[in-house]
Amino acid sequence: MRELTYRILHSTTGPMDMVELNRAIGEGEGASIVDELVQRGLDAGQDEYGAHVRAFGSIERVASSDLDEALCLMAHFWVRVSGLPYHDLSDSVDLWYHTEGTPAARRYVEWMVSLESDPDVIHHLNSWLINQNA
Image 1 (cartoon, rainbow, N blue to C red):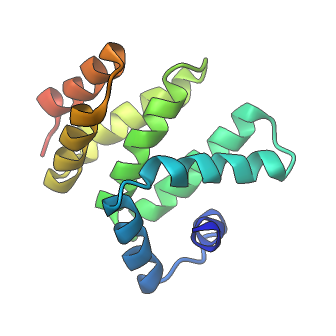
Image 2 (spheres, rainbow, N blue to C red):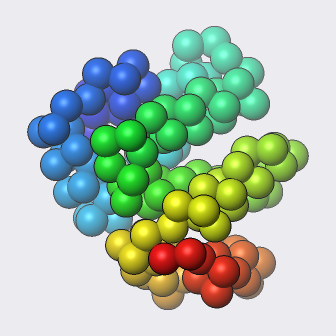
């Protein structure tokens, strides 16, 4: 997976990478992918906020190839940043969901809600399901 996150960060993904990303997300590795994207920024010397901004930008670029996969990663990214003072990033994810939500992303968020134990996260993810355009 480290090679895949490298290609995501450096915008060198191809069709087979999207297949690999789909498989990884389908196997419940979405949060790990987001964690690794952020960690790569930290390893490159960025501060915590900068590493999150870089990871979010990478996820946005995935949307140009596969919106469903990007939205799945964004859901995990939102969970990660929801407890941090990066409201610009969490608000950006909210905006993506409210304007670009897809049926596949909706099913994925429903799955995430079914596994989540934090009531605040459950409430927020459920708000996406209620307000989603899909």
